[in-house]
Length: 208
Image 1 (cartoon, helix red, strand yellow):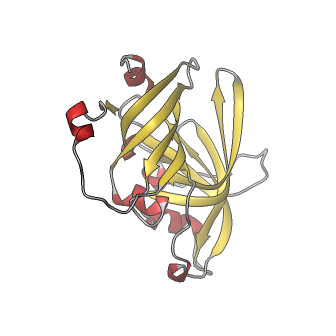
Image 2 (image 1 turned 45 degrees about the vertical axis):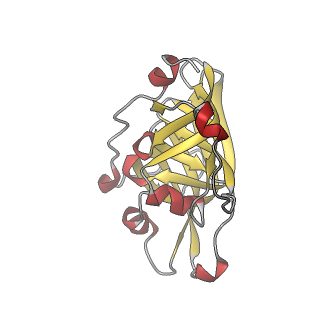
Image 3 (image 1 turned 90 degrees about the vertical axis):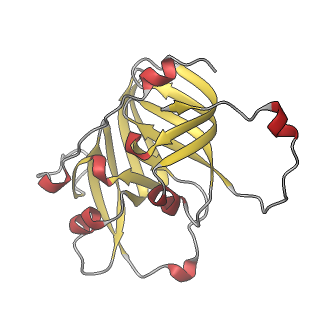
């Protein structure tokens, strides 16, 4: 994770041409051992498009909290690589409704890193949802989603209207079963590679 300083005073006083304001969305980012709550400029039609079109994201006014010891840190600017993101709770517009195609919501559950996730994947009627997940772009949206994980304060559960999950980091995915029963099998093709860089050690060694 890369921390960046704010603009220099000279830059702050320099006049710039007026431009249309870029919408700002508030997101919750789930990483390997931390959760971040921050704001991001929405430079695409939807958060899903933004997360799939870019590989790094500059968040502002972000609070990071370790899931190992609950240590928290408030930073003004932080750049997060997509390979560090396991899931993102999405806010903001759903995009142009004229671009949507008819889909069918299919309930699935999956494991991505330390997180247990369930929700609806939207697929074209008659197609296999697991195969569809595997063929999607990296960040796959689930609607009416639930994410559970362990923290120093115990087991946490959060619900979101839309949750993006990192397909490349997903350990397994299966059709949804009862909430108290694990999926009966794992899809071998979706075995995740895990995070290459830890999240918390970076935030604990920087002063802001």
